[in-house]
Structures are given as structure tokens and as C-alpha cells.
Length: 190
Image 1 (cartoon, rainbow, N blue to C red):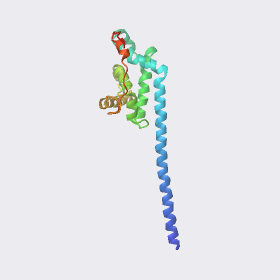
Image 2 (image 1 turned 135 degrees about the horizontal axis):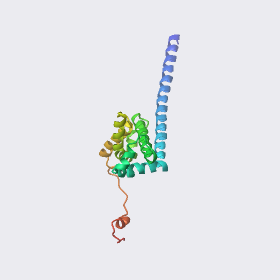
Image 3 (image 1 turned 90 degrees about the horizontal axis):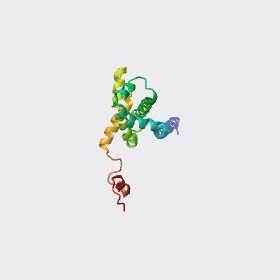
Image 4 (image 1 turned 45 degrees about the vertical axis):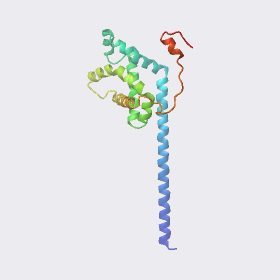
């Protein structure tokens, strides 16, 4: 066998090894991306389930809308920076700002994030919309919480396309309506 053939075979072998290495690296990068997404999803879930954040969300979603109707409370809300109980506004909005950034940059898959949290994102966005509008105007910058806004838009679109996350055509478990009778005032349980 001539030296040219040995060189050609060696070059082809080297090319095959480099190609296999590149393919393995792509699989490893894909696996690492999946691992990063799991970490980010876990961190979001843990934050959402923490007692401090749940209390901040409760305030923003249920107490803040009531306070926005009271002129005295409105005066406190429009005093920047937020203080006291109103610090919950920043806590909630900044968390969803981070989540929106993770989704926008592909760290978290948008379909997964919306399937998990579309309702929660929209509830908090709607509760904070008057505050967001005011603060953006006060600082003359629409970039405030824009990743939160992006997450809210994705959530709204997702919720319209998927009113239920239950797989279409899949069988459902039977329900137990025994508490419904109590909730409507009917005491006939049986």
C-alpha cells in the first residue's frame, strides 16, 4: 500500500473521529440544557411555594385590588419606592420578571412554563396592571417589568388556545360532589 493511501485512510479516520466527537458534544449540550431547565423550573416552583412568596402573592392578588379602590391607600401605593406591605408588589413583579426572562431566553420552555403557571402569571399581572402603568409613567420607561409583561402575553395566548391542560380525549376520573351540596346550602348528602 502506498504512502498516499495510508495518508488518505488516516485523514478519513480522523474526520470520522472528529464527526463523532461533534455529535457527542451536541448530545451533551442538549442534555445540559435539559438539566439547566430542570434546575430553573425547580427554583421557580420552590419560590412560588415558599411561605413568604405565597403571602406576597396573596397580598398582590387579593388585597391590593381592594386597596386600589380606597383613595387613602392609593396615595400610599403611588409613593415610590414601595415600603411596608407594598414591598410585596416588587417581590411578585420581580419574580415574574425573572421567570419571563428565563422563558424569553429559552432557559425554560414557554409551553412548560405556561402549562404550569399561566393562571398564576395572569392573576398577578392583572392585579398589578394599575401599579405597573403608574410606575412606568412615573419613571417614563416602559421597560419596567417587560419580561413579566411578555410572560403574561404568552400566558394569555396559551390560556386561550388551551382552556384546559388535560389531554383531549383522555378519560377522566369520576368526581365526588358531596361537598357541593354543603356549599350550596343543600344538606341532603347521600
